Image 1 (tube, one colour):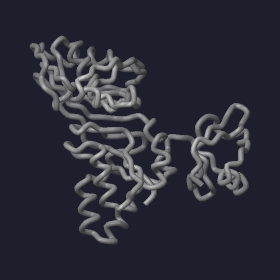
Image 2 (image 1 turned 180 degrees about the vertical axis):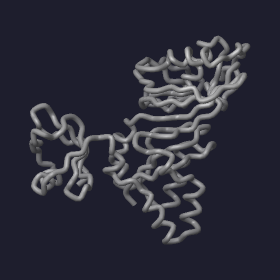
Image 3 (image 1 turned 90 degrees about the horizontal axis):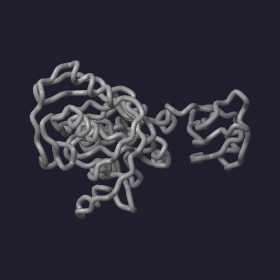
Image 4 (image 1 turned 45 degrees about the vertical axis):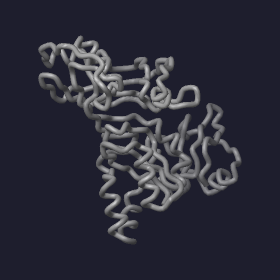
Length: 297
């Protein structure tokens, strides 16, 4: 199988464990996820299968969307409900105006320090590996962007928000910072990813349903799984497409440089043959020269 299978991840397993289960179910050696979800989190987890693993690095660059439940009144050592409470504070009387004003401060471009319990790599190790060893590592703030942050609902000690953000944004850190801004401390209680790049919950298959399809459906079940795969080209739907002539497609297959037409988009593009099959990911320079980033043909 070659393509992206969008899994609706359940709470509990790590993203790596989900990939391991998918790999075992589908009896494939090539499988990998794009964009880690914490064990606590649920929702969209794109899993690349076969040749799709070759474009996984491009898929991770898309924006993400989440629904988050933030618990007020306490901080934890992991910034979420999986950690131990480290400090507590009184929660003020909450109003929509108060919360909207506080949330508004987190919209737009900003710098964010990744948490120690994240999968970010520093000094050759994941931050959570340093944390397990009792090491506190200096982390440089990273540029991130919150495109939209909306208040869905709130109660006495809890609020629900939706977030649309750039890659690399940690909703756990948002919860931490929001609690401090409100003066009452906070942590992330629950998180559900609703979109990752072009992949949404609408096209996701729950992990348990996938297991039932494969184990109980036989060949028909595998065929159903295959029908749910997102093609390599569609997986990069946010990247402009450049359909090539047969001559240009042949050059791509042999790694031969060529010049794009004047009407072709500049920057990163998908190079497609006449049938829409993805041949390569490339960049079109200002002089129209095409530079290959990843050839698949």
